[in-house]
Length: 210
Ligand SMILES: CC(C)(COP(=O)(O)OP(=O)(O)OC[C@H]1O[C@@H](n2cnc3c(N)ncnc32)[C@H](O)[C@@H]1OP(=O)(O)O)[C@@H](O)C(=O)NCCC(=O)NCCS
Ligand SMILES: [Zn+2]
Image 1 (cartoon, helix red, strand yellow):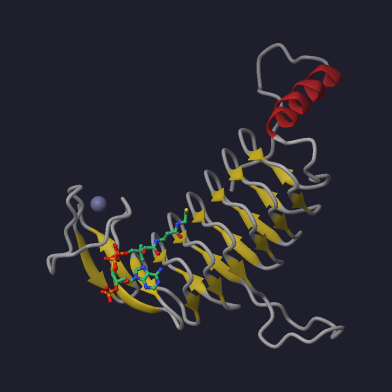
Image 2: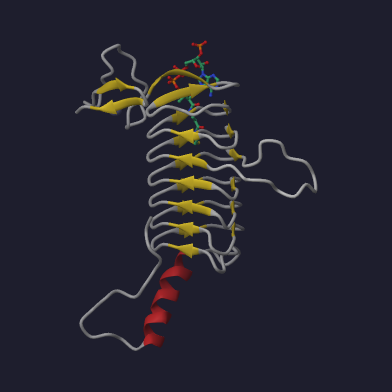
């Protein structure tokens, strides 16, 4: 996780008021005036677009792109260089690692058996590991892990953990193959990609070997 914006350290420290103004300026430049982000921890270089709501204490890393109409609750942690397309809600208990892509209108959940006006019980944690992609309009049921660099297809309904580098498709989502870090489906049995990367099978999915 990246830290929040702070004034850069230099030998000659500027007065506090000047440093705060500078940090403000950096952050304001990145956050659209219609977005509501008070109390959230947002890293430098992150852009937050129109009509986003990011609740206090939510943690967002550096150089992320949070597109219009995204809602992020307080108990959410997002790494660096994450892209979140429009219409996504990230509920309490969602953990998104570095370099993840979340497609438009992907749906996360954190309660296995919701009822209106029921006091919320223990909320389940959903973890999306580094480099993973969640396709447009996919639904992720609560408490699941999406493996490193996994690809969840558009419209999939994910009901089980997804292994590292797995391609899952459909409702319920089933593994239909493997994907390379570059995003291409691995079509040959040798688990090699045109981009030059090669992989081997392990218990948790694939691991890169070149
Ligand atoms: C799954 C995906 C990665 C393609 O993988 P692929 O290995 O290249 O798949 P192919 O296009 O060769 O299709 C293989 C089969 O899966 C089916 N398929 C592909 N995508 C599918 C999807 N999202 N849901 C259901 N079936 C799908 C195809 O119809 C095809 O079926 P067939 O063999 O019976 O004809 C891609 O379709 C996808 O969903 N990408 C995400 C796009 C997205 O959400 N982008 C968001 C940013 S705009
Ligand atoms: Zn590749």
